[in-house]
Length: 298
Image (cartoon, rainbow, N blue to C red; front, side, top):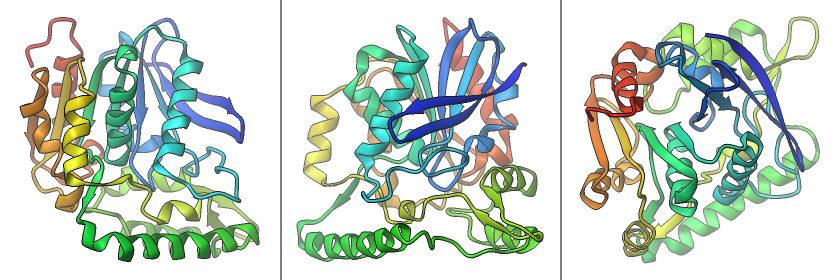
């Protein structure tokens, strides 16, 4: 499968990514989770059908993509705008979407907003809007805005990240993985794409500090239920759920409802943790391959 690099111009810079497959093939847009980049799919995509062209992007503030303008917060909707710009750039009548974790949640929302653009949706241990009770609205909001205020000041001064040796950084990267361990081979690929070399064997991470503040869209549970019903998804959905995922239940609870609400949704449970697509791509790939067939058995 032919592998290449891509740079998509956007008003604040560019969105970087990688492509797999021939340019003339039907497109599959691929999105990673928070703190990851396109390399989280490096082991999975070569196992998928070669009749497609896979366009995997680094979300803004991740990997090699430009950060959002430094004087604003990074919100859930900013990432949706980025996806919209990428879809326009790809120029397909309809597109297949594949997302892991936070990337899957973004693509789920995008499909609700632009159902006519999406022919199939694939989710790997994805999340969705986070529900909260009214009584914690003030506490959560103050926590969020204080965190954002502090990070905006830090970003504006240019003092974002410490420097470290390659080995020190990799050790920290492996130790701080969210929602379960990832194998060293995949971790190193993700880590290397996030690195910026300074000098004298020192590095820093390219990621935007603002993504540390929870960028998910927070709604009351009743509102989320209404959104799922009022703005339905019409295309087939494959939701792959990891049996040993450590992702918090508030981030997952609405994915469990997909199959009940949408008749074209099928949920498949696989053995593995949140990073099963990187750790055990041979488990995930057959499900996606079957789903991508014109007449899928799923």
